[in-house]
Amino acid sequence: MEQSKKLELKRIANNVRLGIIEGVYNAACGHPGGSLSIADIMTYLYFEEMNIDPKNYKDPNRDRFVLSKGHTAPALYSVLAERGYFPKEDLKTLRKTNSRLQGHPDMKGIEGVDMTTGSLGLGFSAACGMALSAKVSSDSYRVYTVIGDGESEEGQVWEAAMFAAHYKLDNLVAVVDFNGLQIDGPVTEVMNPTPHDEKFRAFGWNVIKIDAHDFDQIEKAFAEAREVKGKPTCIIAHSVKGKGVSYMENSCEWHGQAPKEDLYKVAVEDLKKIGESLK
Image (cartoon, rainbow, N blue to C red; front, side, top):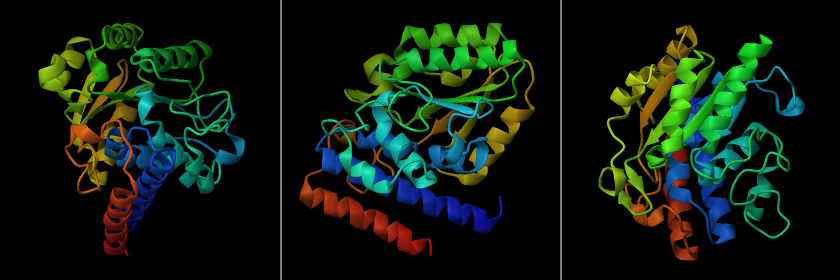
C-alpha cells in the first residue's frame, strides 16, 4: 500500500476512534473496548473495500455490511458519520431517548445500516442469507460481517459457518475481531473458542490471519478474499481491545462502560496525540 494512502487511512481510523469516545462519553454507557479494536478494519471496509455510496445508501447493487457483534455499534456509527452518511454531531446522541443511534444498530432508523443486530450470532447468520440471496439472484454485491471472538462461543456462529461453506458463498467475508477479551475475562478462560483458524478451515472456509491494525495486511487479506472461488473467507484479525486509549488497551474493564469526564479527557488527549503524529 502506498504510504500516502496508509497515512490517510490511519488518520481516518483515529477520527473514528475519537467519534467512538465522543459517543460513549455523552451516552454515559456503551461498549468502547471492542469498538476501538475494530476501528481500522471498519475504516478499510468503508473507505477502500466496499462498493458503497452514502448518497445512495439503498442502492440494490451496493455491498452489504453486518456488524454481528452489535454491541460495538459506536464503531459502526462513527465510521458511517466519518464517511458522510449522517452528521458527526449526531454521535453525541448515542443511546439518548428518541435518538436514532441506539445501543445496537437499527436498519430501520439509520442510513447505511444493512441489518439490525444485537443478539450474538444472529448477524453472522443474516450475512450468510444476504450472500446466498446474491448468488440466487446472480447479483454482484459482496457481503462483509464482523464477529466478536467472544461471540464465536455461540453455537449459531458455527451453524452459519457450516451453511456458508455448504453453499460455497465466496462472496462472503467474515472478520473475527480477536482481541482476546470479553466482558468476563480472557476468551480462552471464559469458554475457549480457539483455534479459530483450524475450526473455520475444518468447516470449509479459506482462512487468513492478520494484525488488525496493519493496513498493509488488511489490504492483502481483502484482496485475497476477492480471488478465492468456491468457498467463503474468514479473516482472523488479531487486535488490541481499547486500541488507542492508554488505560483501555487490553482491559476487560472497558468492555462495557463509558469514561467519566476526567478519563474522557485522557482518552481524547491520547487520540489527539496520535493524530498529531500522523500529520
